[in-house]
Length: 425
Image (cartoon, rainbow, N blue to C red; front, top):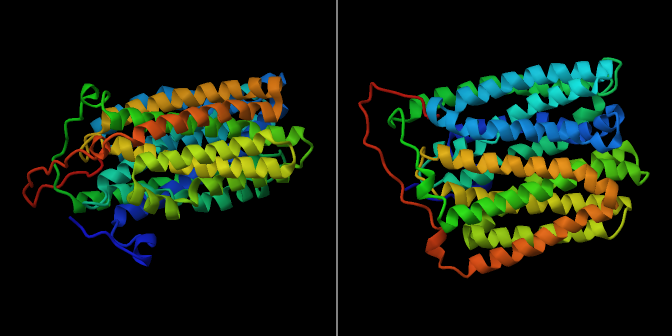
């Protein structure tokens, strides 16, 4: 097994493999495109919707389409490989980008929903980048690769909202240029994915297809249950606050630029902690890392409940993002520990599909909860879920550590040197 890099070598990605670097770049462009929708779609939806109650429907369309595709994407990656599925998702995003541009130019709310729904398909396929990184990481580096891959979102956190606002008026219609950038970022991902595929062909001699682990072997384990709970809570609490943050900021009388700032720092919170969260996870384990995430979600909700000043929005969304990072990393680590390398298609499909359905519920309910209870009231469900999650993770932390340990790796028999296959299977 490869020796774990220490010191500065841990942070600069020494030893994680070329594919992980390429996939981190993919993650960067992926999130840069997604951040455009996260930054603007709530506001654009509010301006085009026939009623304020439907303002978050275009944002919900992303998660609706994503939930419909997430199950199928997981099974499809097991059948034809990660790269073809992700390239297909990028092509759909390019089309959705064009529809969104047409929507803001013509003032069509239904067309905006269609465009963002297609971006939702892209979002569903992009969610598998981290699983691909874990499968292609060098021996002993799977969990480290999961943490490192989140660095890709850090650049997107700074650049994405800035590009979304500066390119908004390129075509005369407000926000048209920003939505065009979504397609451009998706287009830039295609050659990177093909480079990952080429690198994998040279680096592996694994069998062409590995039998996926049956869900019946996994779904009753504490690893799977705890990991799934962590991911579902992280996704639901993050989605709800992220959806209403810009709208609540606008209703509180703060500027649109202030709304971009709170989303920007929310995204920084989501990805910047990867510098330390991966190290913390390696030291204390995924369950206790999830406990930290629950405490941070609780802090975020308390900031939101406390008032409608700009600082309340800024702190609530920043802490919310940091909490998501810890909980998302912990949940993904527990899921990856449920199956040997290359055999997690069904586990991934279940986790991504159920997570997307939870995201849909949060997105659709966000605007209703906001208009009934306001910004402070919207934070009350997050506060409640955080407390329950903290209790659940505290009880889980008392269980024996081997119940959350990774399954044994299955080393496939080597194939003749002249036979090479795609590593993305």
